[in-house]
Image 1: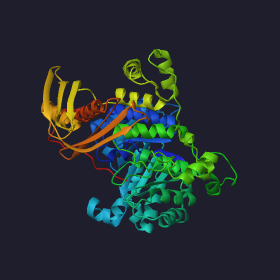
Image 2: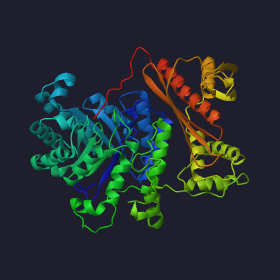
Image 3: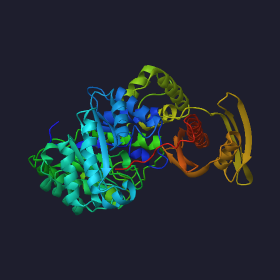
Image 4: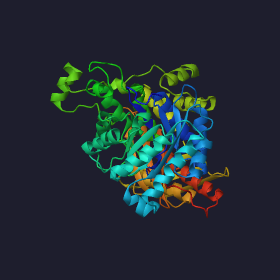
Length: 538
């Protein structure tokens, strides 16, 4: 890998920092699904997790390394604090990957040194070369981050970075851990590093930033102008607190404005070569996948992937777009994979045609998942005259991207009206295989369904978010329901899609409850007296 590439390296941390979003906890299989999507998207590096944090994280990183970290796949990275135990766990988890990276970090700001690490600058300066060198015994590719770089004393940070590079770090990542800096400040930090770290030409400069002030993407673009060549980002900008710099916004900014950025990468102004390896037509699909699996809804006015990103309501705008899209659109919706294509599949279509279309949409399913999805497709085709690609995506997401089915919905029936008390009856099959039925009255049909389910499952929880949206237009449209539950401080999400919105609501609730119940079982298995390590940052 060249130390000064003429393109931007995309480092995706959706599965590590993105999963730190409250309620975004993912199962190993869900992480694998997202990792495969990221590989299709064309990211250079996947930060798959923090292996020392928990057995589940170690297992997920190891399985991603085995299945996605192939010769032609992305480099797989594991996060590790600057300690031997962390680094060893990362090295072991990454062994199956053809191309691996250990990303180790330690704080360098005085506020972190004093209150979190309780170490002096001299102690940190001694730790860095030892831990970087130790990481090099597991892989040739080591990334080092001075945590809270945005608030660190520059002169001290320069010393730390020189030491890390001399010990073998090939990438130096500069994190704005608390989202504090402004674009001009962040650009000046990168310029200061280039001007004052004597061996910086031996490493790639990377940036990582949070969006607390809504400036993460702007900060990164300014960093590119000042010499940064790797951007650490997440799908939909998810992550700790206000989230990370959004991959789709960075990639499309560099794509649409590449003539502006070309000179900063040493290219001719009029070069049309892309600045990243990202397959932009996979962006929308990957965004929806991450949203559905994490339960993190994309706001309608979100740049690039929001529902309104390519919508025009103003009459003046509509008139202009009808005459020429360039009047009000700076990019084509199809460039991110957003199309209105309708397929000719119907209730008489065969399994092979169904599999072929899913493959064209980027879904590669095993035989069992294909069978389940095909059965759902037939069920929906009986109810809808036209099946769109969006319907197919909803079917696949609903059918194969669910938590392990501990409780199964067998029946839901509601009675409601403007002069009737909303009543719901549900039948569930519990983990022991026994069918249980109960009924409840609620303020509305969905509330009644949820109360009836709670009476059967009997797991205390608090419903904190309920979202319904239509997949397509029309009276027969499929509805997607996303919900989030809170239990003992943790948040669990659920997702489902159905032409019957009450059924979708019930299935989404069961999906979240299955995640919650599964987590309770796992915690009981993993010695509940020992808390699971969750501390990480960068």
